Image (tube, rainbow, N blue to C red; front, side):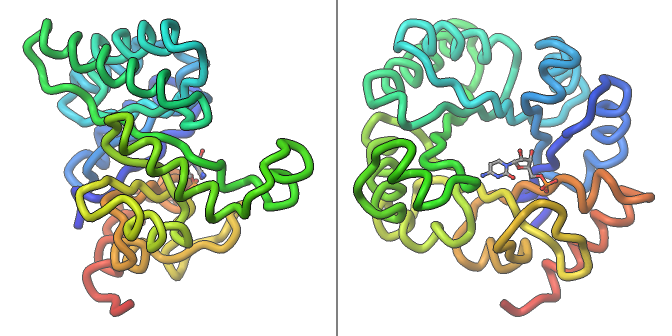
Length: 239
Ligand code: C5P
């Protein structure tokens, strides 16, 4: 189970991030660098983390013209990330070109290309916002499955999706398509600002390949113990 856990390093400093990664590396599959840590510390944090032997998911959600997104994707490969992402709403041309550019750069460097994920509809977005603010007339579920299919057909490896979207995406995109699910909470943890959470075991049972966990572990007084408890719960829980 531990390979499926991605720890979100949502902290401000390099020292905090490296401290958490060092303490948790034997209990987790990968570590996520998002906008908070990246913008506080710079791209070197990815190289430094990868240099300690951990896998890094760079969660910057690119959304730009195909050329810019592709050049950014090449840079991500050079940093040594194992996974990164972009917004599916950037369109299939942007996604396909970025995927191609990352593969070419990886081949030139003689390394395995990073996994590329699409973000369909942000889970913070409501049906009402999608329709009345963004002008998307079709229902949210349809928008999610249609964008997930667009991701797959553009050559992406998978999507980031909430637990409630997993069955639909599995049905639409098949068994090999990766699903990475944030917003999970062990039974004993606080919900924080997440809504409609499921436990990590339930997310995996629904078909998630990876689950992203942040504060229940990183904000715990003893992060290692919290992650051990979470893993024990995952092994024991029937969902
Ligand atoms: O602390 P917590 O477990 O809520 O952290 C979840 C992580 O997953 C955060 O880094 C958050 O930005 C990210 N995320 C999310 N919901 C999404 C996409 C990403 O919570 N829909």
